[in-house]
Amino acid sequence: MMIANFFLAMPGLWSIILIVVVILLIFGGKKIPELMRGLGGGIKEFKEASKDENDKKEDTNNIES
Image (cartoon, rainbow, N blue to C red; front, side, top):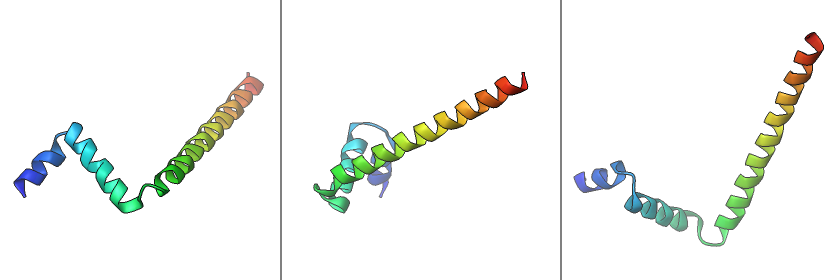
């Protein structure tokens, strides 16, 4: 029990390897590219939405000035 806590508490190579192995066991090799594509698409949509919000705020600030 103490050894497991030691490895999980220290960020480093072994923690990363453990996380990658667990992800591979859970999702399998074929699902990971699909998951990454979906994650990338979500991040892209989030950035576009936040950019649109910033543009709207700048437009309203320019109108008020």
